[in-house]
Length: 266
Image (cartoon, rainbow, N blue to C red; front, side):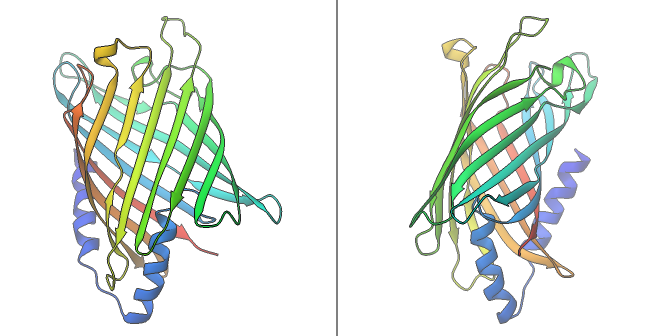
């Protein structure tokens, strides 16, 4: 819970920051870049997800995702955008103890055209690496699948969807993954807001290996974000909350998400 309090405090602090007009114009442009998951922009998002009433004992699970994004220029027409997600997990065990460690790492690579008109898109493979430090934190098997993203940026809006499906073989315990993930994102950049914006980006999951009545996680919610600087370093700060209207038996009731995304524009 200490990590949650730290990220929440930082989130509220950054939203109170004010900037000059020249910096405000720069911040507004960076905000739309930061909201594009396949922008030609190096960044380091650190995202903390606190899941409340999770598991059979309805306790708190915390997942800190370290998510470096690194784009590469293939040629004059195409970029390759890579994104790695390394989860650091702390979750309760039966009897009051907790398991702390790494989950399985996800690596995605999106091939994206440089000039696709008003609609930006990318498609490519996703690979699951068996980096979990305990059986309770991941399946511990190599996996793979496909991922795709499409978005538009009309006016002050950034709207799009990111979908993927990942499969793994069975591990020694007979567990395997067949997981569908869909994250739609709706961002509204407030005019004259100095990089301030509203966001809704829930992550919908379907576990195809589960029973039909225990398969879906469907959250609803949103939050607020802002571009600011620490010295000369631009940062995208964001805080949001999501309620799970549909969830597995041991799924969380709701989630608090806080993020600091360090931006490295060219």
